[in-house]
Amino acid sequence: MPGTVYTFTESPIGFLLLAGDGERLAYLGFPHGKGAIQPQAEWRRDASIFIDARAQLKAYFEGRLSRFDLPLDPRGTPFQMDVWRALTDIPPGETISYGELARRIGRPTASRAVGAANGANPLPIVIPCHRVIGSNGALTGFGGGIETKKWLLALERGSPPPAIEQLHLL
Image (tube, rainbow, N blue to C red; front, side, top):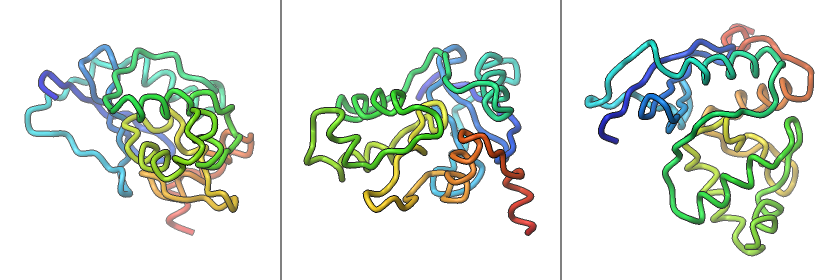
């Protein structure tokens, strides 16, 4: 994405990469897992951007914010955008299955496609794809890893776990 600027913000799950046009957030990347995003060569680092996003993420991780109010610029297909909009309607700490999410967007037979759209979410946490689970109740794929997904759900349910870095030491 030409003109992309980025910065990092510290969190209990590690440093997060924030990238976009400087005003609208387009990517939130994890430091580890299959969803790890690295800055592209043409991106420019700017520590002065996304002040509001960093403040809201800090409040979220402190348990003081449950819904984000940020200018976003996710890029995806119309179907992906429908899925991502529906994700923001899932209350914090609650979970639904891929099948239920497919029903909510009016595509009851598209649970696999919903899973693929969930996996393509460029703004995890802000667009809460961690709230979607398997039909059997199991925690399934998440760009930041299953431990991070478990951690985020515990945080939203009011039982803040230790920081992820500490979990790796146990």
